Length: 75
Image (cartoon, rainbow, N blue to C red; front, side):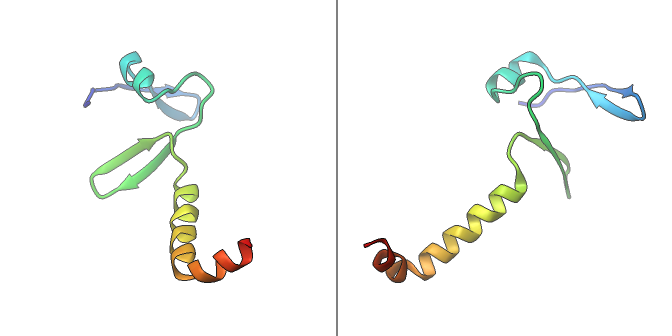
């Protein structure tokens, strides 16, 4: 879904209002945190914490590499 938003001044920053259909689909509500990530294509606004994603990707690599050792430790 692509929607046009208008940037408005909020104190010393700029803000945008997201369409209700979009916030409903993403399960976002007032007070939720979202992350603005600069990409080559522009700005990605996501409800997912990019640091958490990196940690989970690292965990997946470690788990795969040390699968046998982790299974032994779990016994």
